[in-house]
View 1: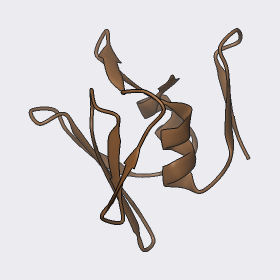
View 2: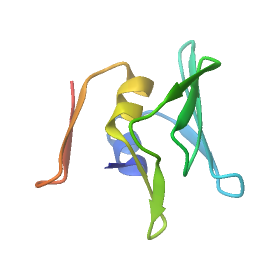
View 3: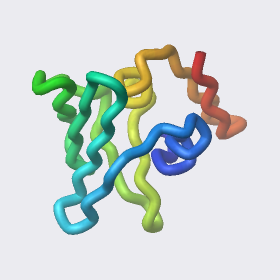
View 4: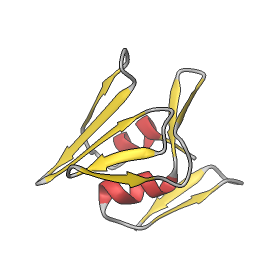
Length: 89
């Protein structure tokens, strides 16, 4: 699981988060992803895709599975649990 806000800030990718609905909306170019925190489902360009695990909120921070980051960025991502570093290629 990767810290969503930190990752998005480091790659300078804008997003919207609706805290009342717990919904993340990411748009980049022609692509759009909509995800409800706490579920394993993300709608990418209107198509439902199941993530490896459900995202979650821990101490007011959103954590998402690495395959979510890969999906929305179109790049490979590697999370090192020991060091807490996410590498995006």
